[in-house]
Length: 121
Ligand SMILES: [Zn+2]
Image 1 (cartoon, helix red, strand yellow):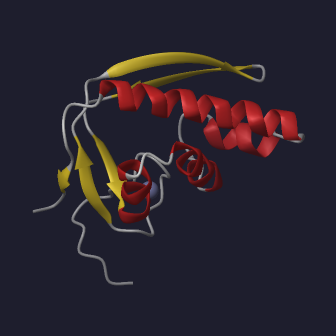
Image 2: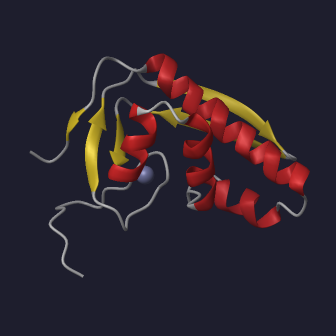
Image 3: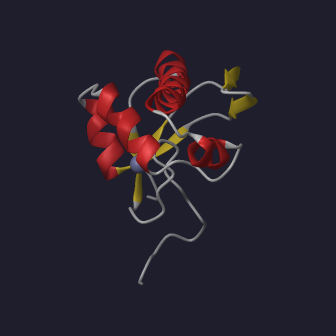
């Protein structure tokens, strides 16, 4: 393991720490409250979003379906998402979570402030 990232950066889309977070997307701060299964999930996005190379490619090609799939596969361990994933036992429950991810990411796209730039430069 040789990493040159000084702080614990994670991709804000897939939450992966295995990939280098290489991109920074300026965005406005926003909060959304979602009812997912029987849980209420508050998601506050503070300013810009970081992205790994893989997510960056999906964002730039506007491939939002694959971006949601990737996010679900690497689901965040914070804000209750991991619990939700573990509790999702049916296709319908999985789809509800994916719809919530999609809603969150759609909010990112509508709160974006201009083009991305390379991070850590
Ligand atoms: Zn990512």
